[in-house]
Length: 124
Image (tube, rainbow, N blue to C red; front, side, top):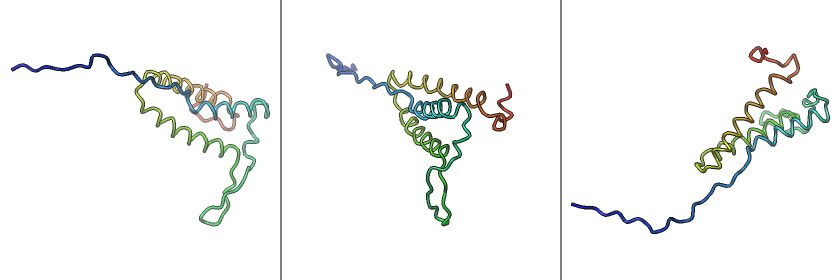
């Protein structure tokens, strides 16, 4: 018994993935630009309140600049995880850049954090 396989004469157009840089680079740049240009490397003013949101308990939640940047970073991290489900060649480069950005985040948080905020795991 023989079976025959019919292959198309020409493959369809290959879809190439669109390169999108790691989304977490935006809060990284925003933090570094504001802290090092405006605060002189001391992010003490990130605790200043921007606005307040009413909570279900009736108490207001005072959103600081640090809280706002953290929420933006978490939202962008969600979209970064959604991007990671692609299998295109460009997404592999995006994954590598995301890992490099993570290492830069890690080094920056250990190296340039104020002494009172350094944890024992960052004792270089």
